[in-house]
Length: 186
Image 1 (tube, rainbow, N blue to C red):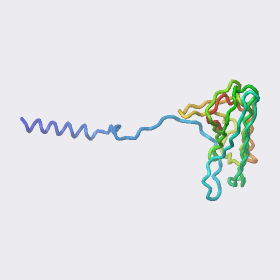
Image 2 (image 1 turned 180 degrees about the vertical axis):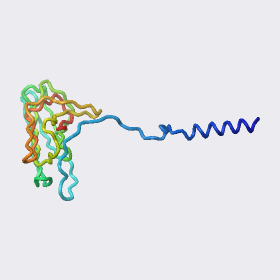
Image 3 (image 1 turned 90 degrees about the horizontal axis):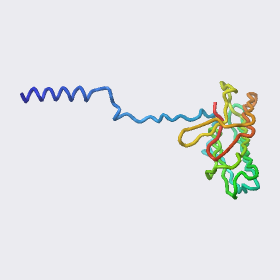
Image 4 (image 1 turned 45 degrees about the horizontal axis):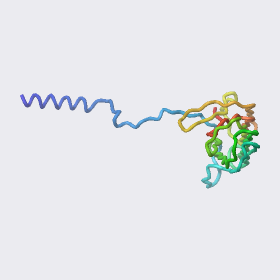
């Protein structure tokens, strides 16, 4: 009788231990998907710099603007140019704050610190020139907001202009109601 029970236990162990359901050992897949960012050409040379930044004190009652212009040598046109301006209207917020604008030179996204919400949306002008826009449908390009949780949404704007002849995407008056990560998605 002991031998029969031992054989049955061995068979049960063999069949359950060799099943194809390996969920316990498989890695967890993060199903959060973000925007499909339009990427910038990789920098030539040995530079490891992946972002540009500028910091400025802004009086939210009076309004003001923070701007950044950078360029580097790369891409199908030989040079990539970035122009970014965030314009705060009067009474956008009710205090003075030191604001940092960070532009990622891998995907052209713009991030701000500290995190803030505004009484009136700020307006973002973002121009990137020197991109390889091969295979991109200009009608599919959107200005989007992306939060760390993976959520993203299309943001209002006055106009997005795409010029294939010089690899340019230009955003005019993109609405920025709060600080987060913003950029072009396709």
